[in-house]
Length: 258
Image (cartoon, rainbow, N blue to C red; front, side, top):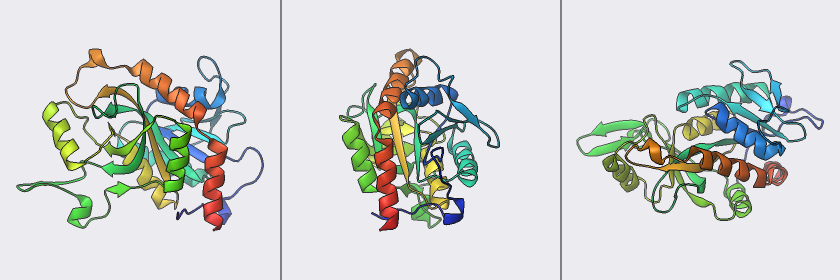
C-alpha cells in the first residue's frame, strides 16, 4: 500500500492534533457523524468550533477527528476540503453522508464503502456514448482508497456493501438514467454528489481518501415519500461509532514510514 502523509512542516504534536478529516455536505450529516464519534445524546453541543474560511469545521473532545460541512456538490466539497487541509495536518480524508443506493445490492438503510470513488458525469457525451475525462486524456475520473484502509473499515462495519460510489453533479431521477449509470459502472453501489471532489482535494495534498455512505433512497425515479433520511442518518451515526479511528490512523502512519 502506498500512502503519502502530510509534509513535515505541517505536523503538530500533542493530544489535540487532528488526524482524520470527515467531509459531509450538510449540517444534519455532520451532526450524525459527531454523535457517532462523540457518543453524545441529541445534538453534539459539546463539539468545538474550529476556525476555517467559510466555517463549519467541528471537533469533539477526545476524538482525533474534525468534521466539515462543506456544502452540496463536488465543487463545494473540493473547496471546503482543500481549505481544511491547508489549515491543519491530517492523515486521511473521508467523504461521508447519505446517498442513493443501486438496487438490489445497496438497499435503503445499507452502509456503503467505496472501493472506487468515480466522477460519473465528468466528461463528454458523444454520438458513440459517454467518455469520461480519463478517456479524453484530461486527467482521472477515479480515485481508490488504500486497500488495507478499506479492508479495516469494512471489517469494522460488518455487513457494509463495498463497491464503486459514483459522484454526480445532477442526481439521478429516472429509471433510464439509473440503468445507464449501472451499465457504465458495473457493480456501482451508491450515487452521491461530493466524493470525487473530496478525493481530488485529498490527492492534491498527498493524502488518501475513503468514502462512506448510508442509503436513504434507491437510485432512480424521484419519490420523496419513499426516502428514509432519518434511517440513513441513524445508520451514519452507527457507522462512525463503529469505525476504528485510531487503528485507521495508525495503519496509515505505519504505511507512511514504510
